[in-house]
Image (cartoon, rainbow, N blue to C red; front, top):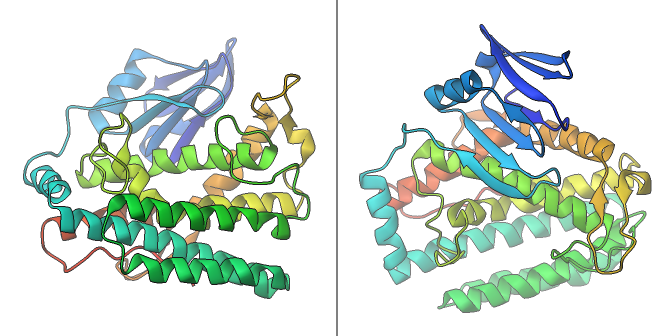
Length: 334
């Protein structure tokens, strides 16, 4: 269990010798070997004892705090940080307009290429010719990237391509559950709620990977450093959105694993659709299965988990920033 998700409201995490123990009202809910845990994600009203916090900090284990719906609140930060030359070069790369643009282009290119791959799979497997127009739009957008000379123009290309991509979901979904387009604030339907929750989890994973490598998660290239958020983690997760979260959400709905019963619709119009507690547990189980599944990575020497791919991509970026490689290569699926 590399990631320990604490979602039972009112529960408490203890450390008993070499074990983590989750309890609620004096009842033991779960026991896990502490050495097996690489990350802890706390959702909502869950408490940690001081020995647990001390252990996490000493071992440099990432611990993320969110509300019960997955909104990020903060994290434990150990004194074991990796600063120095890499972060200096990272800042210099952001100031260098050409290098910043080249890195940002790679993030967007990886995202759009993986968009295209996902749609080609569904076009072939489900025989949906209506996806051809969107696939063509993505190919045109990829061509446009080559001549893009400003970050603002890059955002425009990415935004238009993404809007077309998300509209194609209605052709793929066996039950659209009210989905018409990507909407975040607030998510008005179950599909958008799952996408938002999944992207939040992916951002946590990527921020942990960035921190392991020693990059500053707040100094981004595509996402503006003026915003108080983990911009570099958001940059690096772009190419993984389609293959980790989008494909998972489409699979969950089309196979009937997640249905209307897993969501609570608001009584007042304009409020967010909430995933139920059982729905959250179900989604987390399948999300974790996805990130722990194996895939070939060219720099892993063979098969590795998607979670390890996050770290490998952060290292790919670090090597480019340190001028050890000629460019950043996004992670692409076939």
